[in-house]
Length: 416
Image (cartoon, rainbow, N blue to C red; front, side, top):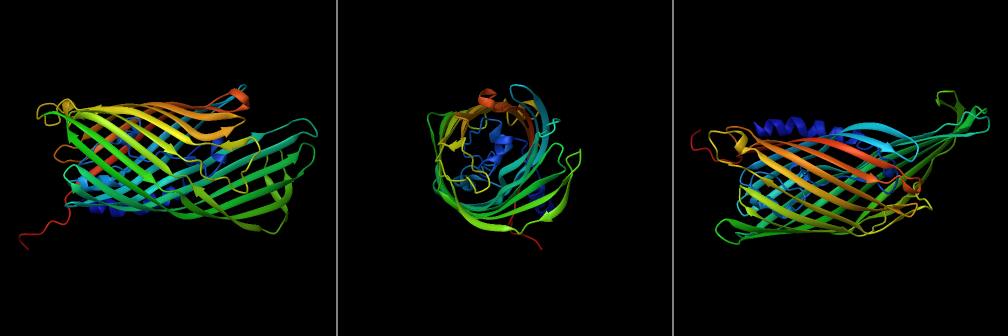
């Protein structure tokens, strides 16, 4: 059954990852856009903590986790995001529905394999300035696109409680921005379209270790490191003159030749370290720290004198609780209850203000009766940015839904 689901969803969701507009943030103009959360709904509901060697949930954060799976695991997730954007004088609301990940994990004894597709970053905004005075400047900026990551990895269980692994990622995508400008009272204006086609590889290494503290308690640890990666950006710029009507609609009068150039971008290296303590299949409390280098993601079309970059840091604290995972009398006791906190320094500085992101999350894991599969729900509320220094503050609420489907593959038939 799981193989039929995978074959029907893989193509559909892969195509959807190209077409979706995954963000409404004006901050997605910079670099390669908003860097998306890398992980499942389960980990997002715990503040991003992913330290346990789970046997029925795929860990997208650390490639060492694949060897601990007991069954073939297929996981997919998506999010509905409602955001209120405001500055010192006005506010607007925006909603987005996004595909978050699709991945498969295959256990093969001490060896484990994982592969899948994850949207890495998203670009999507529309900013409009309209003047009713004659001679006033009018402009509209909008953008779409982002970068996706297809990954393949393997892990090996060196010891019963110690696993190492590695992923190779192929990053690819397209970002397109459009700028329209004209002066009130003058019907002729300009249009500029920039397109960047991105491609490049990166590598991620990980290790996980757990040990018993006593009969019930266990200590969990997770370490992963992504090497600095190179992205090739093939840029195309098109300038055109045309006429505008009162609804900001553009009609082409003269199109210029396309300008093309190439720029090499640098994906930052990233180090993640997490620890947790808990009782297996009962509860867990953990913390995770992520540190990323500055990188070099500013392209030819989105450099700005008021923007700079810094080292990014992220802190997560969270855990889960299961009243009784083996209860035969109460379904509610088999539900996984999750919660977490997250604080992030994104690495972006605009108008001398460091852009920060903070959030609180809760979640539920609903077991599918008669199987090891489960349906996961996550709720996250947070704030990014500030209204100081002429900037935009984003207050968001996210509802995420994920499926973790488990089945046994590669079973040798005893009877034909």
